[in-house]
Structure formats: C-alpha cells, structure tokens
Image 1 (cartoon, rainbow, N blue to C red):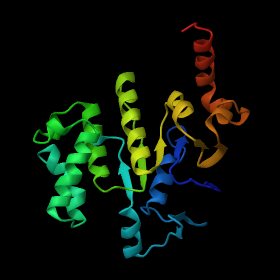
Image 2 (cartoon, rainbow, N blue to C red):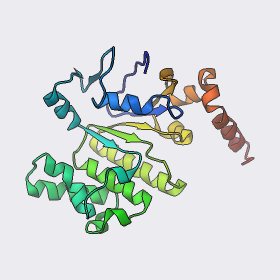
Image 3 (spheres, rainbow, N blue to C red):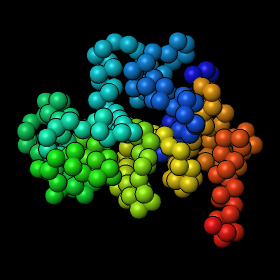
Amino acid sequence: MDNVSLKIEQNSIYALIGNNGSGKTTLLRLLVGLLKPDSGSIKIFGEKQNRKKEDLWRIRQRIGFLFQNPDDQLFAPAVGEDVSFGARNLKLPEEEVKKRVDWALKSVDLIDYRNKSPFNLSWGQKKRACLAGLLVLKPDLLILDEPFANLDFKSIKNHLEIIEALRKENEMTILFTTHNLFFVEEWADKMLVLANGGAIFEGIPKDGLASEKVEDLIGSYNKIRELIRKNRV
C-alpha cells in the first residue's frame, strides 16, 4: 500500500473496490492490526492505533470480521455452538450468551439450524452463520470481505436486507470489499478504488463509476450498465 488515505464515517457503508492484488485485503489487515504500517498512522474509534497487545485486543472486541470463505471461519460441530463462541470468549454470563445467540440466529433466519452441523449448510447459510457469530459480539464496525462471492442474486438480496436491517437497528459501520459494482452503486455511501497498491478514487459511488480515473478498471461495468438502461440485456 502506498499513500492511501481514507475516512470512514460512523454508521455508514463504505466499499473497497479493486482487482485481485490491488491491496484490499492488505488494507483490511492494517485496519484490524494484523499488519503494521511502514509509515503513516491509523486512527480507529477516535484513537491512534498502536501495537500494544491490550489495546489491539480492546479494539478488536469492537470489530466483526467476516471472511470471504465461511469454511475458514466455522469450526464447531453445531451452528449454535459456533455462534456462541465469541460471546463466551468475552466471558459474558451464560444467560446473556444464550440471549445474544437467540437474537443473532433469528436475525439471520437460522434459528431452526441451532443444532445442525454448519458444514452441511448451503454456502449462503454458512455465510449467515458466520455473520451471526459476529453479531453476538455486537460490533461497532463490521468488516465484510467479499460478502457476495459465490452467491446468486436472490441470496445477495437476502444478505443485503439482513445486513441493512442490522445496521439500522444497531448503528453499525460497515466496510466491505467486493467485485460486484451493481450493489456498490445501490448500497454504499462511499467507496475507495484501489489499483496497484494505491488509491485512484475516493468518494460517492455514482461519481466514481463515472470517473475517467477508474474507467480502465470498471469500463466493462459501465458498458453493461448502459446496455441495461437501454433494455438490451
């Protein structure tokens, strides 16, 4: 990453766009303290990030990180046990853990799957189970790495409705990476476009998708969008 600057407003939806190798994952790892910047600084939740273990732990307790591949996140023999892990790790009272797990499973429409193996779920259900595991932490910042990958249109729409309802209910900030520019235009408040480890645009998605700066990166998207408007596809 080189000379990247961004500001994410509280309770907003912020998209990271870029081809593979553009620096999206590196930026996410920097934000949660998994990587240390060579220069510059990161301020999160109003305080400058440092490398002290206790400070990183305190910050990470306020962040939920959804992996691109849910199989990298699921591990327990039952969905309910998997979802409860984070809350128990916070050493919450058992009654509070149960309350949060019930709420999270209902929120993602998996309450009837509590005792089922997460490894027998569909891809979309696995993603929702992982999301429930983050919701029990009641994070202030929810980071979603390619949340729409390998999902059909109906599943994507369902995920968007769930996440948007949760954001409004809990005043969460959402940061997500994606290659699906149609949903960026409809859903995100702002976006950052990365290329070769640097930022080439930050701002409102509508402006970015029409910008000459990012034409080489998203040109095919603009052509498809124009065809759709002309009812040709």
